[in-house]
Image 1 (spheres, rainbow, N blue to C red):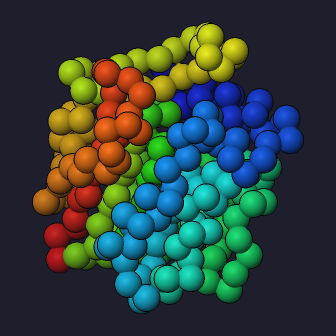
Image 2 (image 1 turned 30 degrees about the vertical axis):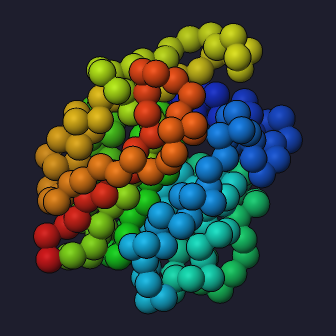
Length: 213
């Protein structure tokens, strides 16, 4: 599986007049209220945030009034058009694999996107964006992760009626990958109540990792 496979899935979705919640794949999995509250535990009114893979802004639109600045990076304009227009929100319509910035941020958030990259790809992304975290700042990655081992979904999905690609890596593996990129104090948080986890072999966690001050 490569990221281009997952991007093709979202490109096809983007062509079909998506609504604000289309990016959630199954709309019953919209837990962005919880996501927003989780991020705000670590943010202040002076925080700058780089949100990678912002989708339709379901999280950004809930937190922008509580922080100083957000740069929201989303590959597809069809989704990005739903992101709030505000003086402290900058929307960059670009694939995060191609996005580069020399700016530093207090927090980088990656919510529900790491599964769409294979191990080599996500390792490169963590290493590349390490430089964009201020000393003492943090990276928050929320995703489904494999409970017992990696879980790879590659091919036709009966539920979605289309090809779908995701690599739900084993949680300890993802944490070690983030450490290898240079982050320290890497911790996992069981972010949702049990009923939000549909499958026995994957589970939602947030990984919080700091850059040494």
